[in-house]
Image 1 (cartoon, rainbow, N blue to C red):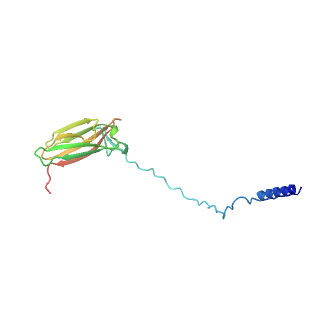
Image 2 (cartoon, one colour):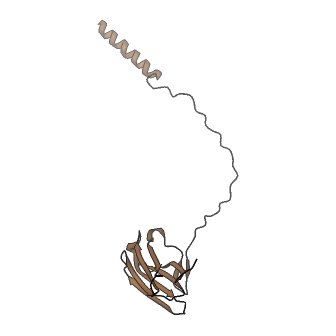
Image 3 (tube, rainbow, N blue to C red):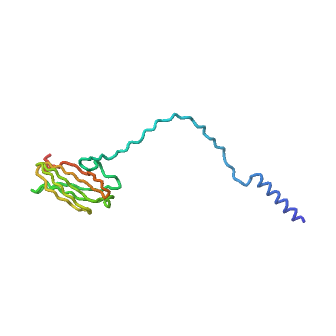
Length: 163
């Protein structure tokens, strides 16, 4: 009988402890909620995004390739030998799977324009164009499978420069 009374008293004391909330850890110091400060509305200026310029008469987009289509082309001029060749080498890149063709257009110093094209270029594919012993303008265009055409290189290259 004593054990039954003792058990009932322990259960009662346990209920009082649970009811008092003593089993939960303390929440620490009270945190203050900051009072909102009214602010004046700032005018929103839309961000300026550089959009590529399409040249309708020439049919290409001026500017670099978008990042997902980025490829590299190396253009060198043979200045040692008698033949003034211009060599464009396709080096590939992140967007190589999107490249349909590479076009090289050389406007020679004698006024003649020579264009060569390479479909589905592979890494280290080359296009050679005969230049002059003067200064020739070299343009390289990349044609993508989606129909867009980008001019990625435009330089005037001298056969020899004496510094």
